[in-house]
Length: 505
Image (tube, rainbow, N blue to C red):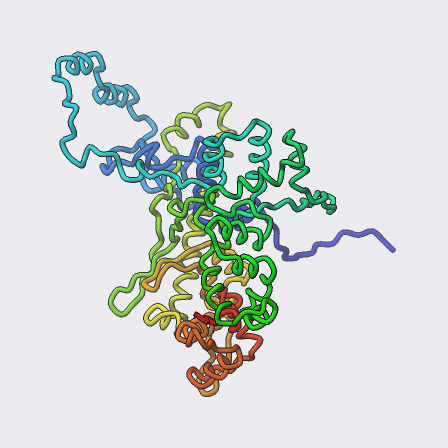
């Protein structure tokens, strides 16, 4: 053994801060990117946008920020598209600002001499925008709280009712199951008597107060299961004794449409059971159906790119609406760089601003490049629709654009494209392939749509089984698919089995 020095040249991947920032920005959605840009602008005084320091159309005004590009020393890269004269007359610029300033005393004096504005509206232009008149829909908890305030409950009963309302699930049922702790254990299930003790109410009065709450609108709310929910509605709306008995004793047979078993047990004709089932079907199984905690009108998706057909070609355009165009604040940087004490701080902020601007630009170019590749490979989809979607995986696009599959995955996650066929996430275009008898493979998403179309066209009184759908797919489309695959795709589409899709009346 001996000690010696040796030179060796190796290649290794180093995750620099710039690379980490570029990767992080690449996988952000549009809304997350907007928030990230706002945070960076708050933390970095060297960043500016057109709203803070608007760019003048006149090229003689050199005191505005300019986009960063090119190479060179830090001081030279502050203004690349146009040079800034270092000895600009600061006094002249201050005089120009004074000219533009408003003489507020004269303004207020002229304002006082003006006649009063008439109170009547002269037209629709003075009306507030429609967005200002929209109100948030009331949630189920707020709707029940309003009814509770209008009731004549005692203080202890009100506290108990508030606990009940606070324990309702998204369907309007009373959920008293235990919750899971951080260590993996679960708390014990609660009862209405436990809620009564916590509210200071006599536990014997809890069932009666709960029944009164279940009479609130919507009727059947705060029920503990489906049977109780339907029983409350049946008693409230005056259903017959036979219908109440079916709900109370034969919910399992009612769900399976096993009317013969109900008729045998209750010793009544099956036709009468059919009529009772018609009335029971009119009851609401989800009391919270018309209430939601989120306003659907405020949920919107802004596309990252647009695919527009121009003649025979498809053009991919990025959506910069609502995105702040970042620039280097040149005027501030030039002033602060003259201060030796602030030079190091400003240099670091300038480098950080440059890295951010370049990372955002690289993100934009990468999304457009990947989208153009998707459009090229899925041209028939953009022209004819979902039925012509081709099977494609991440590797296909990665090899075409000379990128890694992980990069393509980051680019296509939470990014949306607006097309003539609708608004789609970029992930939507990646599908596994399904074999066809005498044609090229078809995408799994197209098979799902074919299954949905077959079920929509079926006879509701005699729905098709999964095996029948397999045979129809092979006969119509030449698609070879197993019965269990049809069942899986049907469940993904939210479609029930044939036995539960059957309409008897």
